[in-house]
Length: 508
Image 1 (spheres, helix red, strand yellow):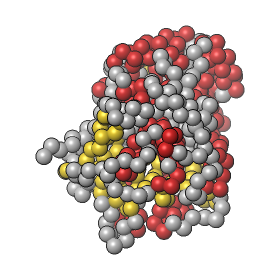
Image 2 (cartoon, rainbow, N blue to C red):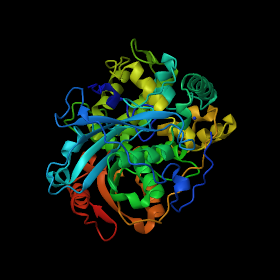
Image 3 (cartoon, one colour):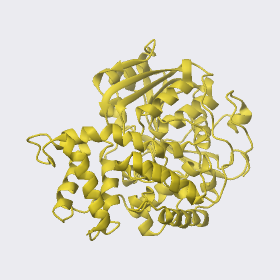
Image 4 (cartoon, helix red, strand yellow):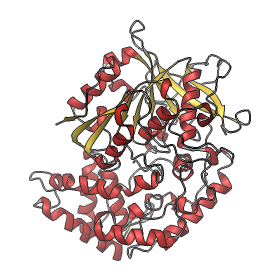
């Protein structure tokens, strides 16, 4: 029996590249707020799915109980009898069969990330009563990892985070960004095949319903994180009566006119919400990585150092790019603010650069993993059309740089989507308040990638369908991650028992 192999390095790339909430023709349906089989495309009654062939998973550090399987789904839901692609699934069965309620689908962030190993990883952080209640289900989305993969075969220089995230030139110019966008988009069109054109959030939601059917479940519960909150919200919009208990953690603004373009813009407020926390930490007496005597000094110090590195980059052999410049420092700042545990990384880079030296070269995932993750993140371009005019981005960058100097225009600059060759195949799904009241949102007050201001827009869109738990914590990821015990208890209680706060609450 063939075993499904797992490259653990894939996990390290899941939120690093095109995924913003960490850096492509035939459907003609509209984004009606009402569920219908026509909208779901492929959701109409089907013949019973054959039983899944569960086998031992290969990989390091996996729980021995985790098992793996595959399921076939249409590449194009508008042509459901055409070419099929494979999705890789995993599960750890519920630990108490007498208490088993169903399955908990662990929806990954990204786009361009997977959760195939999540039942063995963060799934084991779930409290016992939740693990007793559900089979924990992980999966790799279409195009990613052990599912049918895609790759754009980009040039190595374009795998640098400062290219994948569209940092403008030091003077604010987007000329280089537009050239990079054209080069990358051409490579994806040339090398990504037909599948890359069918990677979208709506299609991932349809895939989830095929997974539900393959598991033999009438309904599924879900825990979506970061981009997974948008996937979970879209699934609950398209298939409202096939959801049981839904926890959405670190929530994206669901604006259907902007989608990922809006998420990129959210870095402006996300950084402003979070940088003061770093500044306080980086000026604490006794901190071996202290960079300033007071918190008020850290921001101007950072801005001066970034400007100096713009003018006088420091050679950095072995890195990509092979210099420590202003945008590398800014990108490190952005990555660091995802988790307070990462603060030393930025502090040590600041200390090194002030001395004219560089820190050790960071160890990232292999290039092949990055190539796959970038291409599998194509939903950011396929969900909604981005402006194609450099002038639009130039105006936005100038405004952003003036108001939000820490992010230097990045949130309104031109990504690969500015040159994407294909228009979206269908409108983005509009999230509404129509459907069952079975959603719990959990959200840190300070989150660089999915700020509270954006999460409140998802809360407003869902209306009576949801309640929101706001956690007075810092970092990207609230439930069982960077949140607090109050938030964790509230989400766990809902998953285990269905008990949900009567209204929105705050966990201090």
